[in-house]
Image (cartoon, rainbow, N blue to C red; front, side):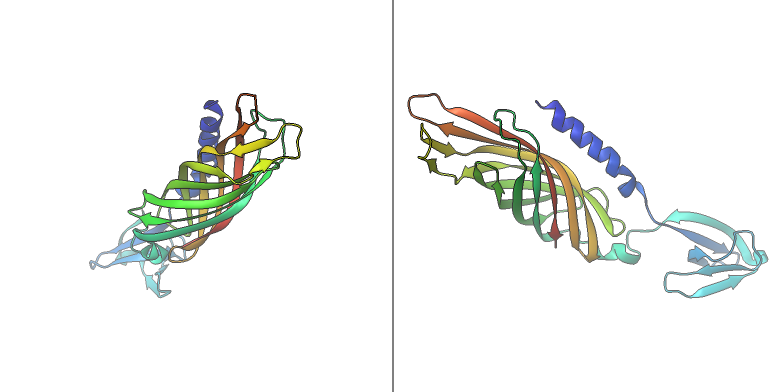
Length: 245
């Protein structure tokens, strides 16, 4: 049972890896007079004269005789858009999408609609904790999940921030009682958990558009008179889009 979600998470991390592994770089020009200029070259490194454009779009021209060395470095966290990264404070996530997959203990095989919102506090790049509530609408049952969420960003560089999430809680079953069947059924809720990865595309500061993929398990129980309780487990692939700030 547990192997599938772990394999899924490893696959998602492998696919998303190149996105957060890429770090912006810049050329650092060291001059013999002691100047140090950072930016992007507009000419070949061996050109004479050498032209360099800085982050504020100013252009500098130097003869090769004035150059001591030229190196390529990663951009510091404080430069460019990275200065706007929100390292701590209140955070909000709203997501909706589909829960696709096959139940392990039911013949129902249709996709479900899912909506959730999470509010919490971001302590640092790697740790955000919050409380969430939502609605999962399966073919035969309607669930209101209430859960704790742990999230974090794999990088703080650039405008695309890959993140992970782990949700654990309880799904309240609001389907109620179905008296139209030969044996009336009462639907009860159960525990839930989910894990996965996603990407946040920043608009400004920490506000951005979300895309995520994860594995989600929701347990419920069917109660009938004179028969033992029937457990039902929904195991789904959650594909969501939304926004965060």
